[in-house]
Length: 304
Ligand code: AMP
View: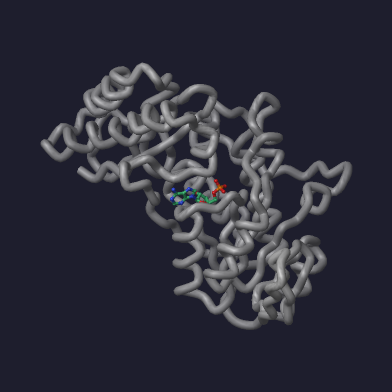
């Protein structure tokens, strides 16, 4: 399967004598025009799952949910340069399109949209979607200036091109999920936003394409993030609703692991992402920390 190839009969050689002929049902589209004409020819409900590729079980959970709830599933794979800061990992972000396409074909995805940067952002482009306020300016917004502007801009463009009825996002990026919900509300976009809980490794580490950067030692140390969430959740389960006590429990857990450097712990309102003093209704506990050079985030719902 190569980007640009459509549905139809395929012949694959394994390098030796083995030749297989198979019928491929998944379209791989690399231009905006091809995506738009495929969309125009598609009746029925269409779901979009936006990703940056290097797929793992977290992404596949979104795809499976989309598959179960819609007639057609489009997955986009686009490492979006506008959501990376100048000092961030855009260039070295892990990419494995051949493997991604194999995984998506096995999930019976109908189409994969894999545009180039020039397709998404034609030379001289200058149209941005920027939502202001604490939601985009605190936490990830403060740590990564311009990040949510890049996210909102690319998602608005993807929605315009693909025109999905529904789009699926992970709670792993809880603040991003809320930014997308606000984007849809403020721009009156006719898309229903659905969310899927964070998929974790058996030991608790939240799945992330960036986990590929971790050495064995960093991977072990990174478990402090999910442990810190559990520590605060335990306190909440015992009736502690004071946000500072919950933040301190999470911070202490991370401080016990010298292999990670804490950036923030937050107990935030789940809609505005403003810091709370008391957890009186469902809220988000969020952590960001570095293991070596790799920046990791994780979060949990706090339901008192
Ligand atoms: P990304 O490729 O990192 O941009 O992620 C694409 C989508 O997959 C986003 O909606 C993420 O929130 C979601 N996602 C990433 N990791 C996970 C995970 N471990 N569990 C559930 N969803 C995830």
